[in-house]
Amino acid sequence: MQILKRLVIRRCRQSLIQCNRSLSSLPINSSADDLQNQVLVEGKASCRIAILNRPSSLNALNTNIGARLHELYASWEDDPNIGFVVMKGSGRAFCAGGDIVSLYHLINEGKIEECKDFFRTLYSFIYHLGTYLKPHVAILNGISMGGGAGVSIPGTFRLATGRTVFATPETQIGFHPDAGASFYLSHLPGHLGEYLGLTGEKLSGAEMISCGLATHYSHTEKLPLIEKELGNLVTDDPSVIESSLEKYSDVAYPEKISALHRIEVLDKCFGHDTVEEIIDSLESEASATDDAWCNSILKKLKEASPLSLKVSLRSIREGRFQTLDQCLVREYRMSLQGISKQISSDFCEGVRARVVDKDFAPKWEPPSLEKVSNDMVNQYFAPLGESEPDLDLPTKQREAFN
Image (cartoon, rainbow, N blue to C red; front, side):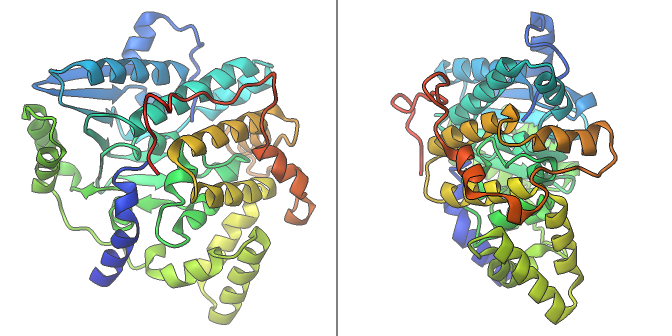
């Protein structure tokens, strides 16, 4: 196990220690009070704590929250009395990603501009966090999925606990891993990122620390002590903050059933060039070994949108050679294509089947991998056109990392 952990951390931690969805049922023009209450602020010594505060929806992000976070983080960055920032969630989640039901309704109501504003606002904040000049600590206690990973992984430190559940389950709803996911998934060891992005499988806190998605791990009952310690610090020195986190760190190992114990098989199967070859490889492995894990992974892949699988694989592969800003610009194009219904209606169909009607029988279009053309996939990655500008990020003012 120690060999596994050293191998995994060595292959990814240096990239991820720097590295790095989502609408509410509230209207875009929510009142100032609504906006303020969705992100609570605590101030202690030289630390500021941003608390995602929509516990009834597992702290789902929306346009208002994205804008509020951006405003707060910008002001804190300019304040010499503030040394570092902490983000956490209220209730039993850090952030479960997006209120995709509201996004689904906005699309069906033809309110596409509101959808665009959401993606633009959130992705811009993620870039701001990824280039933040002050140390950042995300306390990932509970569900940390989709956009929740997007607003935490780009920061300096990510603290996982025994309650942490990470996943990027977008292919199961006809979308693609976004909010910077094509950047951080592509920097994971071997082809672990392809596995997570295509299947949507979950990781525990112990698995997150083992593969480098988290920088620290502590038992949940220690969180009050950690928050007290951080709140008393007067520093802007990352090494001082890291020492405080390490003071309460615990050793955690992935369970025996973890995919991290199958890293060689995972790399062999998910290292192929196409989704079809990945599935063929998994089927061969399942046939040769009668491995229940292979069969469960095959089931997840066959339940996902065929178009999303192909788009997501290409996205992660491209992310391996791009900076954070390049990934976000590309993901913005992909997200707008995904909600436009011009190529496919898989996103709305996936949300309908899994969240709205809950019949769990999505009718994907195209219905199979062989019917997904290269032209369809290419459209997701093509420039949006003169009348639809790309995501504009301040790369000249805030330099992206590789």
